[in-house]
Image 1 (spheres, rainbow, N blue to C red):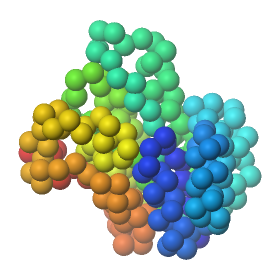
Image 2 (spheres, helix red, strand yellow; image 1 turned 180 degrees about the vertical axis):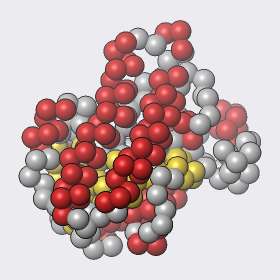
Image 3 (cartoon, rainbow, N blue to C red; image 1 turned 60 degrees about the horizontal axis):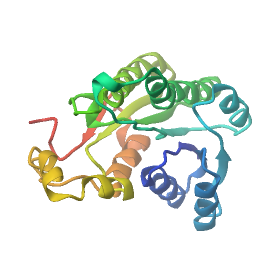
Image 4 (spheres, helix red, strand yellow; image 1 turned 120 degrees about the vertical axis):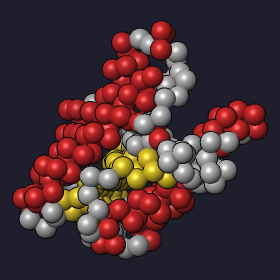
Length: 237
């Protein structure tokens, strides 16, 4: 089994890569940060590293040209540049969409063409967010990218389904990565969100990884075009 993990600058991509390697997958980890790849390979030598900025269409095309057959793809690369709606600049808008939406489309095209040619099907999981369906102050562009990603996921599921390629997204609430803890450790700030989550807490990295593994696995063979909340019930209420 082959798997490509498009890794963001968070611990979700790293944890997913390691979990898939433990499951026996041959993992190709992709990120723009060589230091992250080096430490990942030190932790798990079987992982194949690819260093490229996924926002660069041409460089991505070259970097992924010869990565071999891929059966499973996790699109996790993302960025968040937060500012009030009235202060959004064209550069911030374009960069966010280049990474959060355009790169997902591009990497998925590269991988899905191979899946279609082999006729063996496959599974693609896109990392979205509860922000795709719930407005958050200062998150105008981020929310817009995740809303676009959810619809991209659905169209991919529609068009790739006939080739037995399933496409789904995972939509977490705030996740307690290192960045999440820095941003949401202040109790009063955290309470603005956790008070609206029936389970009363944010997600841990393993909560997200377990959902990704489910959607990649044969256990979800009839799950396609789904946006799966990992949010403790936030969007349900």
